[in-house]
Length: 338
Image (tube, rainbow, N blue to C red; front, side, top):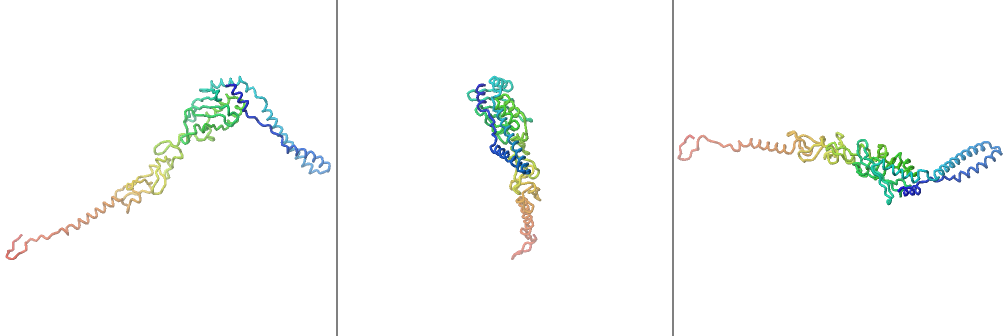
């Protein structure tokens, strides 16, 4: 495995390109060197001063280009002593002392380590596997960060860590140290840097903040749900899940359970502002279920009472009969008292 790693590092380690000196700068320098003596010989003082300033500026630009080329040449020298086979073997041995498990896959060309369970600000995220693929050395992200016991954010299953999404680590300030460690073949340093990032929480660069990791608690049922799946009560401001949120059929606004009531007539839910009480029974109804501030049942009852009262008043007149005290006389009969 150490020989495979050494070959991969030497083959794929990124190299800085030598910065060439721009031809235009050299041509400008040669032209100014010809113009300055000519201006001085002709007594053109202002022109000579301007040419001299341009000459100094051009020389400084040329000097910066030369320095950049020298730096690039220094970095492109022979590999450092860290690329020796014995150093890589020591790095591999050191990984076994610092991680829960280490797996060397010579055939697949991968090195994997497993961290201890990661916990950030009371949120348990579980252990992570850091898998380095040697064939991708020299590319931007030759490794993956895999959750062994995924505890993803409620709102995104692909986000298993505030700084890990789809098995890709947001390196932040660790980008350059990781890049240099891989370029030098310092595998031990590489894995330690990645683990340090996993153990650190930076809310400014998190895919999902830890405050929203378990979702937002519904004010009615108490369940944790995705923030995008919640509604804010237009009356009291309580946040509820979509299952608990009630839409008022009267004003088309959303309310929590405490700020709505069910109409006793149509059985639909309305906000308290769209409900009124029946003047007779004091039950709450929507405005459509009330007629002259009375519900249908009370109206029917009132109508029945009026009809009964009307019948009661009319019954003595219709059923009243004349009861004479003396029977009428017939021919041949004598008056007899009743």
